[in-house]
Image 1 (cartoon, rainbow, N blue to C red):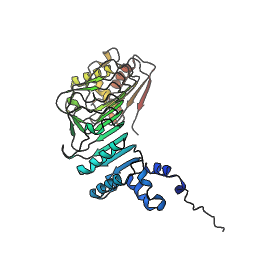
Image 2 (tube, rainbow, N blue to C red):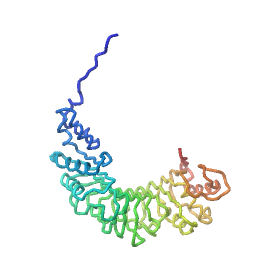
Image 3 (cartoon, helix red, strand yellow):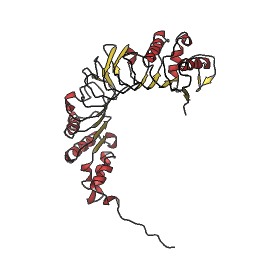
Length: 366
């Protein structure tokens, strides 16, 4: 048998340095640095990467991770622009190590910064002060603090930031985003609140607002929105909140997923849910969870309330997810949970009364 001749040329190494560095920028920085051992051609390629991705899970010891971060920040070619830094550490590190990351981000005009640091106490998380990025081109900032919620008392002062995501923080201030004039997208995830039960979200350019799985959001009685350009509103929390806002004329997409009030169901919660939907009446594409449907049915005589909160529905989507405390109705089983089909139909017909041509979708779990 004739043996085939395979081409053993290293075509990858023939690519220009800029292209190779661009490819390495998509890797965990640890693996990008390890390519320096491939050949002389690769020794210094990693110092020109435009994205830094630090993950302590790639290291057995925390001290090794911290030494590696210091090594990369010291050796990197600072004449090459740096687009983003992702810093993910599920253990408590030294302040010196984290400060070096912040200094590098500011010095290089980073536009995208993602920080995830484990927090075992309020003092263990080295928060990013507002002055760190004053005058910087930072556009995307994502902060995640698993463990102990880090308290925020003063408003964020991030003039250029367009996308802000906060996960695992404790809000104590009334006005939180009034100094973020260019904020377009805001995500508040897994956060807690203290002090006043009223929160004001003032962001004139805000278009997308996501609030999800907030620990103590039931303690907030009112959210005042000062965001006339809002087009998308996603809300997932144990209980509804009372919304106050000017007319949201640009609102198009609404998603509501309410949990359960543990204890007896109170009419005030279901009434608040309805008032919340009424503030979102301009929504054209609405998604509701099955829990939300049940919440609304708890309002006495929901089918008698007129008109529907939505004026111009184009689509209504119901997500039949997991229900922890199903109602004790004697009806057919939907999504493996006991729920009165008559109640389901009443709520759906109620929402569609002003938009009979709207598309209706029921999404069942896989």
